[in-house]
Amino acid sequence: MKVIVPLHETAGLQSPMSEHFGSAPFYGIADTERSSVEIIPNSNMHHDHGQCTPADFFAELGVDVLLCNGIGARAANKLQAMNIEIYMTNMAPTLEEALKRFGEGTLSKVTPQQACQGHDCH
Image (cartoon, rainbow, N blue to C red; front, side):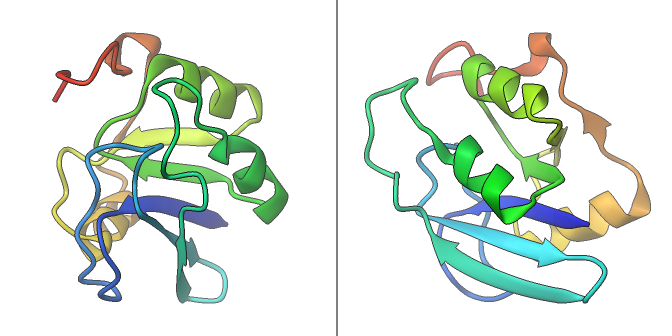
């Protein structure tokens, strides 16, 4: 299973999570079957609000799950339509903590009501 996490900077498993999905500078990709983590830059970081397109890129990578601290409704709808499950990490501070919480099964799937409607949602 491939899990993707929006990150604020690159510091391995200690990378701080970004609060925003589409404008995160980096993404951590964890492959749970291989026990590996790769951090990649967000090539679409600078975009107009609501115009981010990483969902298509994630689908090409074979991503199954997104762990995040916040996501807009349009992005959430697009990812869910592509069968990518979204879980809120309850403000996990780091990549490592987000993956730990996911592995423990303590996270809840995102519902349309939980998706951000603007920049001041969390």
